[in-house]
Length: 173
Image 1: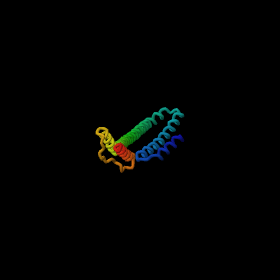
Image 2: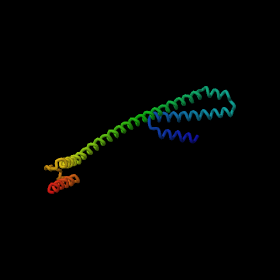
Image 3: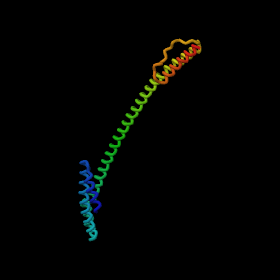
Image 4: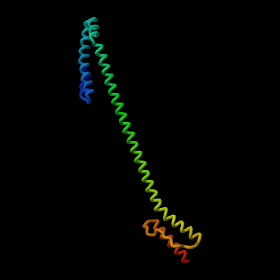
């Protein structure tokens, strides 16, 4: 009995919605009724008064228990529906988050590809000029004034300056 009273008080304390509070109230009313009815029934059993026990049952004790069980089932169904709805909402938010993340990753990949193409162009074009010049010199044996990217301060600029110096050295010999 004591544990049940504690549980009923806890149910009342954690009730958040109007439906929860109404249910907690119904539980308390049923508990009081059921406790009173059970005590009366035990007294009647001790007195061996079968007719009074049957009369107690016919006075609505069984119907009251069945009504409470129906209320309990309805409350449980409501909780289940709320849980299902919350789950569906969470799944929808998760799907949205996943879509946003996927779009973000794709945009980052596109940006990275664009940066890589730009870098490849900055490196590839001067190297192609050097390669074309070397092939032309190999085929014709002459050097024309190609404009290499000597002003660059990176390895491509170094290579262009060294290649031009090599061509001038070869021509002098």
